[in-house]
Image (cartoon, rainbow, N blue to C red):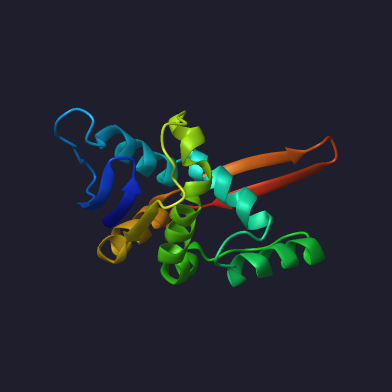
Length: 162
């Protein structure tokens, strides 16, 4: 997966070929930590939480028809299904770049700094080389979770392996 970053503190421009193990090596104060933290925020729970909030407030670049239809079906019928492979194939790159486009809005808070202006921060993530690996991870992932909304409403989410 290729990541292009510009205007992240002292990092004016960088292109990183992100692998399962990526190590940043260099002199002090060259942007290694901020780069690693920025990527961690985008790929982690923090970025997801911020993205969901932006999505719900119509502040994202992309709306996902599969998800919108699933929500509508859930409201109308009380249940729904989402094809995660189709969602990944059709929207994986759009999603991760939409998350990264939101980063300038929250990266200062995530990095716990007011030392830099992140308004010009740009991140572009190309997942095309990794798409098959991502799809395989989705296929192999399983989930069985209950989410309660008060005492009278519970949603059960099931994702079987394969």
